[in-house]
Length: 535
Image (cartoon, rainbow, N blue to C red; front, top):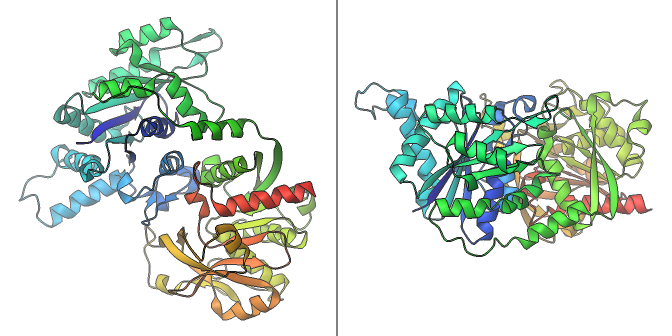
């Protein structure tokens, strides 16, 4: 029987429940336990695939084609495991399932209510991963904060499960904020007390408090929190601000978080968690011997979470070369032919990010032209690859109106067009080409050199593709299709000859990069950028 840990949040959102959940999972994994994490989001969208990145940050995609919350990216990067559709559940999906059952007559004429029908479906989903027998411990992160109306059914489900599973089989970790009032010069515990009171009012007593803070918690504050929140003193854990998310597992280890949790779950806890490779990674992350600057060209650059997987993949790759990769966010709408030298001239590499829609598209195309002509290492991801194709068509093949049908349905040279399988699709949610697909590599290509494999698999999220009617013209002019999905003859990778590093991919390699296994394309790009700087 799997043990269950529920992670809730209070006082404020964005305190880092996902990072805490991934960190304790890493510690427990280091002790030999098989651990997985799932995220329950209280919003009514069926999945985050239709959400604007400004609203919710990046949409992460799993191997099986699920569009999920960005926290699943943290889970994979920390634990070096693959997540799936089962690891992310939303209120929309819960209600959709219950309503479908009601329409089928599954409830035998009963009045369908939040309790028990919605809460029963939540509990069923919470227990699903544990029933496989594959995991010793299942960690469930609840999105939102205690007190939110939409979170109430999830809190009630946790209350029932704690009773049903028994005290040795389930515990609640409550992540909360201890604010520092600079005018008073002290930390304040009252917001946490109120948060715990609100949680308790709904029938859930937290077992462990994780206190986000800018300053160290002294013994008096810990004692006060334990006394007024009704938890053991050893269960008040400090989560002080860290230099990076990768420091958090070590901070949790210093707080004996894994020992405290294993005691509560009646599991063996002797010895220490073994994650020396992680510590070595963090040491190299802290002590780079060189530095490069990479321009990230996108239209959501104001929000760091919009491209979080790309940012983290660069950290993984940079550590391989003991190099700090400084990401310079550049809004694509700010670029034009008159300011390219000023904004791009000092960069060691240029990445054009994925996205949708025509806003900022011309700035991306100009950045790619600049990188191609000036031999600056270039890496295009999804839409970034498609923009590279458009730029090459316009400026090398002299197809001046070349474009994507997504941006310009009237173009006479649609070098990027809608995939055949998408032409009858009218609904937006979950209908793109999603998930992992295979790609065969040309043996004389840069991609083959980096992957060291004939065939690779990576994750996709797109509707448009390279138009093969133009492929011969492109290849004759020096842009080669070096990676293809042979099942539908889809161009997956393009490269430009006679360039130090110019590669565009239709898929999203950033989703697959982890601390333990940095992605080969990011490693190759960082190595090329280092070489350019050293020249």
